[in-house]
Image (cartoon, rainbow, N blue to C red):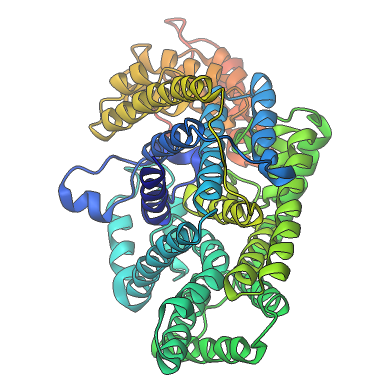
Length: 571
């Protein structure tokens, strides 16, 4: 059992940043790979990773040995998951909240699996080694993009513009020249690299033989990671990496000079790669800070209106347009893990989440002072970098970054527990049954979601809605495909999407266009009015509301019909 747990944990952590890089609230847009090569090079549906995490949970919970006393850090992930369950009944979009809850459940499962594995030295080495291998592949992808591959991706995006939702936003990001590696977003790449920078270097140092080899391997690896950080264009990522490096030096009791030299060598190698890239340093956008201030202000205003239980896990994107005050993009996430936790899941979730990482840092520092080795100090640095970057971005909602972070937090938990579990637990059968039932439920939910993703990839949106009837994205896609037919199908589908995600202005606007195409102008005006109310900064909704109201006021023609919107172009 222990061997299977260790193997599956390592495989999941290897695959997490490579295959599960899509934000959880957009995971329905990820297609299932078709051919063998697509399985190698394309992203996978996040649900597959959640199902693997359910198996991890079953393996940990069904262990026959008596668990040891785990302390505050050991129970906080379970309490954190409980706060998400409490926020579920208040969710404004049940499907998004459920997807996010399952993702957080996977985070907790990875934490406990890593904690169990790390009670033995070989277990922690295996976990960090898997992350090191993943980092190598992520950086290789990022460098390939920087040295020519990004241009090919731009051409692909241009050819598929309008086919896949959010391509316009993707093209704008591609035009910036920022690399993203195997993750969906440059800042997610930066968050991952800042997280694993110190642990990967410490692991490489411990595995390399000979002083010259150690210096060379660590210097080159650190330089590659720093160069990829620069190419990502993320200021927050660089700040988090610097904080992590300083914390690592602070908690490394001996040979401080050695690690200072390694960091300087890494900076030198990274600078060489930046110069060789031919483009010089990436220009950082000044508008990103202004946009984040608006995201954060919107989250604060949401907290003011929904302080206790929030709007539901992961649902910020549905309600944010109502609260934004500038003409910024309609962000799907807050770009601040802590603020989003409060706005989405309420005050209790925020307090527990902040306490979890605060206690984790405290325990990691205690382990580092007791052990005094490079790896324990690197864990403090990793958690510090994660916490800093979490103030500036949404790493928590990207499985490819969140699962490795919870794994490293679990390693801290495993290292702080010195005694192994002994004796046979009296309730291990009960634990196994409960864990098995939970895993079966996860497999049922995620299996149907994967089937819906597969049907969606084949453009069979009707089947997708049958497998995932509470997902508004699929209902909206049927409406998009049928709204000009004016047979009522689009209206019914958009009405379903509105019912499932009532605070998303785009669904109301789509319904309004479908109603207008059928000549139901009074109803269309009502929906345009709702869209304008939910997204007051988007002028297009207000303009269409005014045009529709004017049409309603016009006199009926001889046939008694009201002019329709069938000639208008739908967003």
